[in-house]
Amino acid sequence: MPHTLPQALLHQAHTRGAATALRYKRLGIWHERRWSELADDIGQLAGALQQRGVGRDDDLLILSQARPEALLLALAAQWLGASVTLLDPDRDNRALLTQLRPRWVLAQDLEAVQQVGECEAVVYLDGRGLNQPQHARLIAYADLCVGASTPACAAHSNDLAIVFHTDTRVQLTHAQLLAGARTLIAREHLGSDEEALAARVFAASGQARYLLTPWLLAGFCLNFPEALSTRDTDRRELGPTLVLGTRESYGRLEEWVRERLPLPGTFSHRVYTWAMQPTPSPVRRWLGHWLVRRPLRDVLGMSRLRAPLLVGPALSPHSAAFFAALGIRPGNWQEPSTRHEPVAPLLSQTV
Amino acid sequence: MHAPTETVLLRLDDISLSFKGIKAITSISFEVKAGDICGLIGPNGAGKSSLLNVINGVYQPQSGSIRYAGQTRRRMRAHQAAEGGIARTFQNIALFKGMSVLDNVLTGRNLKRRSSWLEQILRLGRAPREEDAHRLHAEQVIAFLQIHPWRHVLVGTLPYGLQKRVELARALASEPTLLLLDEPMAGMNAEEKAQMSQFIRDINREYGTTVVLIEHDIGVVMGLCDHVVVLDYGRKIGDGTPQQVRANPEVIAAYLGS
Image (cartoon, rainbow over all chains, first blue to last red; front, top):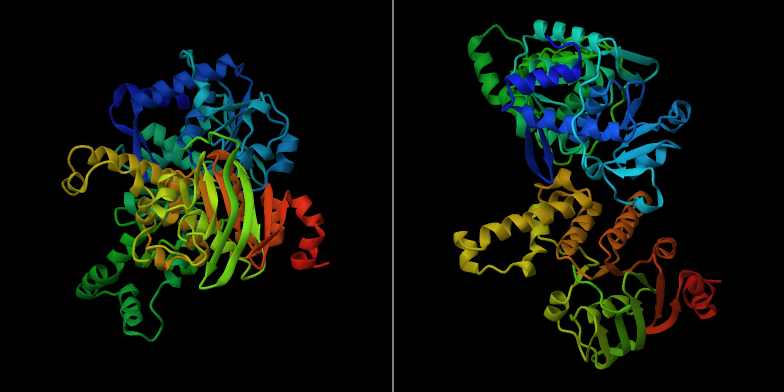
């Protein structure tokens, strides 16, 4: 039984090495990584971090949207026994970063690099606009792994694994994360055949607790959208079986549907209202399913959804009723969440 | 990408253009250095768009010559301009409204295709490999200009500011050496203008593309351009850095106001 997150990763690589571990979209095309490939990549990254001086007492701060590189580097740091601090990339973190004074940072782009003050090294993913030769502390992610060999996994179960800074500081050890994940896997009956979509995986502690750690333990496939702004399109393409959201993210989807409903008083709107109402009649239920509810779930990318999870406060009565009518009843996992939804363009969507 | 072989990429020498006796441009000469962002400013009817049309061969001047990428021509033909690495956007958006963003951007790759029409129809020979390469390049441009959320959306359904960005993407897809932008920020709000300015600056820096643009927002031009040419009634009245142009008494009197 794995006692740390890297051990869970290695366990998956040994037992299910050829299965798809990670799927991500880049330049409009979905790419896949297997568990064995992922373990190799993370081992090499751990070697690269070790070469640059990262060790057990260190902390790697991550300022990035859901990107596979960020996930791999986080696990590589944990491989060495270091902890990972996750900050919400959609917030202005400058004041917090001044307090934290991180030594090692992974920054997604120029904007994130500019938020970070003085530190030992900043690994960046997107070099657009960065004048790299002028800053020796800037390292391109692509240059990180050159000539690195895999070190022994140095993480212990009581090591700090993840630190969050929202309204309060949340620290979780490997043991705590794994215990939480085991409970969730058992209660939600998660298996290795799940397809999970993780759009804001580094933005809230609930995502790491109830999505990342179960991913490593259960061995299902984690999917990253191309960008936060494409998550709705990507969800529709994927049809995930497992999603994890907050009251705000479920509310955003409900709002999005309501904005696109036919005008009240029209025949289409009456059909929608009729189909969404609970009814004891099996014929009406069947018709409502095929005429309205099933197409609506398709448009939302939730037609295959089996395990909708909710972290933080419960859904508003409106949202709860809406999703219940669609047969979606998110399992609530108590987690303090102060994450606010950014306004995302949704022009590509039509209901 | 076409590498500039000399410091001056474009030189217009004594260009004059008239339509049925009405002079649109009178003896205009100026240079654009490789890697510069050059702004053409002037009141409506000053001849800015006509000059852009002369550069990319839509209009043929009655006199003067154009030296572009080391070659001097009495007049530039449109196909020569396109093949030589000149791409442009239009004042009034000229996109295929019934096609998706991706398909519009892919049309910018047409001149790069080497496979025959038969190979393309039957997907034989060079066509499949070429298709993949063009798709990859188009996707890189789409990502660069951050229009990936609308990749498969019909262009006609997009708001105006986004359509302008798609048009820029199509021009950029052709890997231009010289990019001509005719009022790329017309009709945009301040936020959209700032975003478009940043994209133009990024294109110039990351791709090394030389840019000639027409813009009415003087603040944007002065902040964005390395070099500004001022036109008035078809004549050049100013030419220099934004600071020099700002201090030019003739420009102040004619255009900027005292």
